[in-house]
Image (cartoon, rainbow, N blue to C red; front, side, top):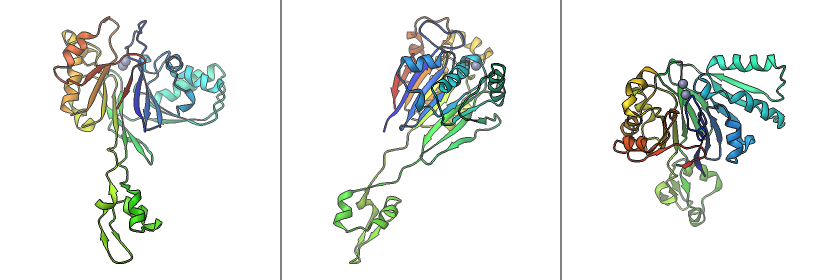
Length: 303
Ligand SMILES: [Zn+2]
Ligand SMILES: [Zn+2]
């Protein structure tokens, strides 16, 4: 199964020739999610050959335009492409009003259902609880209400070793119990431990998306040990005062969060349009957290 993040937009409020505003396409074990939808996201999806029909769930972190201005365009295009399946959108409560208003003024009929879930910002919540994974919110601190998202795969059952089924004549009805951890008693009364019959399943994967936020250590506990962390890093350290004033983070601060949360990989993005080169972002982040990489539009990051 694949677990891969594709960066669709790595810039911040002002786009540049090479960096679109924020949007991430997440392949989470062949489940596909769009996280934030800055202007031009649908063009980025086309550019990087990601199929629109795969997207059923869209998560919007907050109502700054660089995180959602592309949404109405995408909704409209999905309609033109003849979409019939419902589209699940999770975002700030006012987003629903905004979308309804735009569609009403344009007398725009959408031929599929939009299932909207308003986010709340008082405490972290599980907003999707699927058989295979969950999505929960991370409460961030920004100029407007803002949250990030953690995608967590659920623990899988142990894998039964095929040859053992034959060897011990294990009936089919016992297989489910053994996968769940039970031992087995054969017809001739022989005890066979679960350990002998099964192997460990792969470790569940996790991805944390921390959108616009001031440096906030209280998120560390929640994102501990994730496989991949995206954290915004709008500025370098010499502008840490500006970062604070505008409720953003520097590269070194993002790396500090990654280090304290003991994550496996860090990707930083949401760079201010004032920067043309990004080596300094790595020079600030890597001494703190070595496994850091710079987001770039079109970059694919397996985890
Ligand atoms: Zn932003
Ligand atoms: Zn913002």
